[in-house]
Image (cartoon, rainbow, N blue to C red; front, side, top):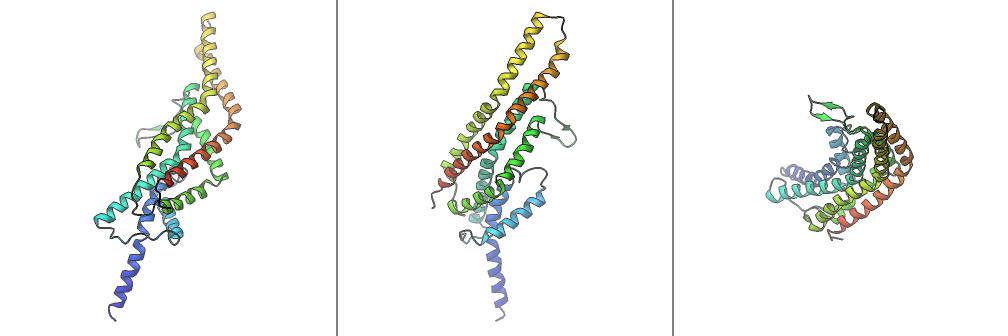
Length: 265
């Protein structure tokens, strides 16, 4: 009888340890996933969100193997969950990375690549001003299409297709590697109209400089280039929502391939 409390305590401790590996994977996803990894969300809030989601999903997840977290197998399982979470978080971040590249390319074309806030004391610099404009639109679209719920659904499906202790798979890593080329090509295709038009504007300024060397195009061309670039952004902005939804559907297809590469269902 005196050992009953100790046995119950050991049973409760073992049941709590079953939540450790899901928490590691969910926390790793939140460290890279769009919106969840934003600097406005502190690490403390991120940990609380991961704990809450672990408790909510814990009962519906497949039963994890009985492992001692301090043993070699338990440590390897922990590293495996962190790696899987980072892999999924990186996959979810790809669409936002596309628009980060678009913002940088467009800012360079407008001559606004240096329009960032640098903090040398903390070693922090803000993103380009054009990307910040795109980010506001992306944030609204993300919540409008229930992107946060899609993220939670992908996390749950990852435990179904990649159970704890199943290991990493080469096919999933290859899918992420191919997606990097997909990010660059998508960014160039979306930014191509603005890049082409701004190249024509710069060509016209160069032609005017050859025709009338006395004209001070340095002081006149810079504001005119910014005005033309902002007009192009205004004309292409309505199409960004459709481009975002198309890229998101393509991304979800790639994540489906990534999850099914586990082959446990």
